[in-house]
Image (cartoon, rainbow, N blue to C red):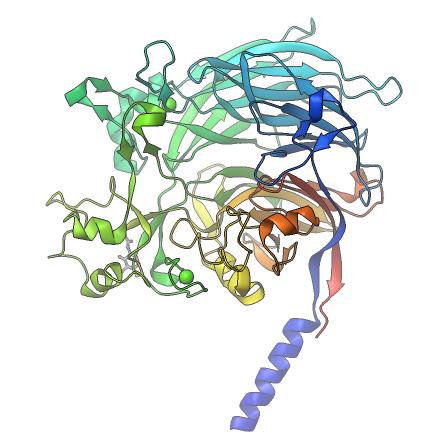
Length: 569
Ligand SMILES: *[C@@H]1O[C@H](CO)[C@@H](O)[C@H](O)[C@H]1NC(C)=O
Ligand SMILES: [Ca+2]
Ligand SMILES: [Ca+2]
């Protein structure tokens, strides 16, 4: 019987490994300059943790990639030649030098227009979108054609397929009002910019105040109304002020926009034809009873364990994908807690606390909670360190009876008509990371004097793998999903059936030196992946589909071909 069993295991492994798999094949890697000494483009400066690159957009006709920095001092848009994805080169760097602007937050490339969103230097003032004609290779010029005000702190932007509508998600995060010197929570909003024949864009600003009337319904459905003010000190904060858009995507028929309100764990669906909000949907919580997770940073290793906790999906990035002719909203379930400090926001508030601290502070209902869960909460190797919500999970005794964590630690598919949750990758991201890259599992890139292996496990108590970039596309006839995690892993999934099925995972860069040295030697990979784009075979100069990846911590751009390769046994 045992011979039969091992034979069976042998064949199972053989089968699993003899299939072809969609994998990434590295084409190029480059660091972007964060500054030019004395403004001289021939004198670039490079540095780790300088936010030299953050977002990118590919112009399919011109084969140009526009890469934006995320710096208030140097607002750069690098215009990069991608005629040969194996050796991209900077053609020009456009410098945004309007002192009223804060920093670049997103970039979109349409056939005849390049759009860039900029926050305002004043954190409670409205931001802007700047429009350009695409870079002209012959004349080497990049010409601005318009500047339009949007809402406070534009964070993300999407365009319809014909580019007649741009949709901007304005986060409106809490800040200190520079005039009054006190806390101000600007309204979140969505701006729709409609192109007309005169070339003068019409803009529609959509606030969320209309949703305040239904706040009780929304809370009952599970939408998080996180910071409600403090009436004792005269801070009133409405639901619409607390709703904070993070990411936006548009359905492939250009009819609907979907906006993720990350901290609120909700998605707004907007009708782009009638310019109205259809509904605000609560995303619900993930029940970890069926999965494993690593919630402790104190064992310097992957320890995926079983805990009876819940977590909010809280997508940091949305995309739209079509499977078997039906559209799905795809979410990267990053997670985010809302933390306000006196220094930065004029008031101290914390959405989250470490589970053991909540226990010690008497916030948990120890009389009704499962004893196993309570013992895990008192153990820093298990749940003691994990950040849990102190706003949710209250029972009728006004004590926390259920533990809610931040972030789904995976990706989800949502029916774009009903917003039903139709697929969850469960613990796939952490499981594959622990299998293929255990030495950097849930690791961080935050200390230049430490190595990637020294920073292993540091994000486990936060939100684990933290997927924060997504792209959908097609390789041959296979719909694919590319997912980038904060700690530099790039996952490839196929979307056959209504699910995301694992194909491969890639980590770029070495682990055998401190980050500063790895960075200097072009061996740090892409850390804190902040954007990913997929370029299909028809738009790729080589005819092979490729993926570009932006790492914010490393200020880097990587390009990979997506190839169907047989696995080497
Ligand atoms: C979570 O799943 C477990 C096991 O299936 C179940 O007992 C529990 O009721 C679920 N929790 C919720 C809120 O549905
Ligand atoms: Ca706000
Ligand atoms: Ca761990």
